[in-house]
Length: 86
Image (cartoon, rainbow, N blue to C red; front, side, top):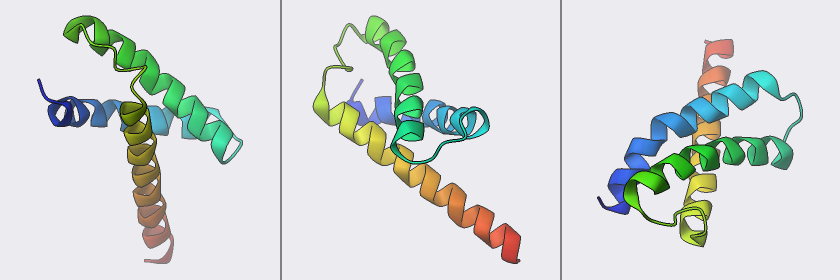
């Protein structure tokens, strides 16, 4: 399975992690992002077992995970603003 396919399968988990952190953690910024990344890392540990690959120690995977999270949060913020004004 290629990394793109893995990434697409992880997307729902990333969205769920972001939503859970939004509900549970009241701080903002890097602390909140780190909590969401921690949740996704827990998911990746399970994926690693199934693929027999070391994804957690891959800097590209970690960077991409953070970038996807930032994009998800940005999209959620745009949607929230549109709902509030529309």
